[in-house]
Length: 290
Image (cartoon, rainbow, N blue to C red; front, side):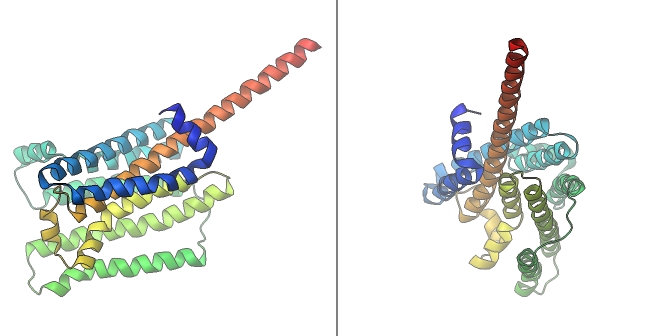
């Protein structure tokens, strides 16, 4: 990470730096919609892969700088991001199909493995949280998200009455996605409380988790808002569509949150190290003067 970035974060703090960076990632996410199709395809895929790769490396780096439960939190987040990265790689799917053959459940299995990594990460977060009480507005947030989750689940049942394999798979994907979201929300809210008590920053981790939540349910929300079926939206994937913008924004949020987290963490460790060296120099000076 560059020293210039660390200086900016030191001067303004992680929250101000993240706020300043948000317009940039919004622009990077939306630009694919206005690009010519042949350029938009490559731009979308490469930026998705780059964002996830940066997020993966940053999560691994965060795991190295933390101890015990927090190390495992970021390690399993890294594994989750790795599966997201692989799912956006054509070679990975070609290899899976070559080994196992094509199956409509293959993508569901890969998503399930990725979600297991995320669930394990959440379990480790819970281990370091000693607060079990949420504020009224936080319960309101969870309540609103619960309503949104129900709408996401029942929406396909309002568009068709035929019980097909595609419908069953769609409902299963929706179920896992909304369950992950409803699990992540209280975890991150409680984590923020714990960080406040311990005088630690939590905005960077929160931004990364918001990115993960958006990546899981953003496509379902877009389906409801746009009125375009999820099957049609899926056919627009990696083509510079509005769906791609949603995914790009979520992946960039993950990468940004984790990058600033390790940058701020490295900066904090440097301050501690500098303070320790200064104290040692003062101690040696006093000892010498005596």
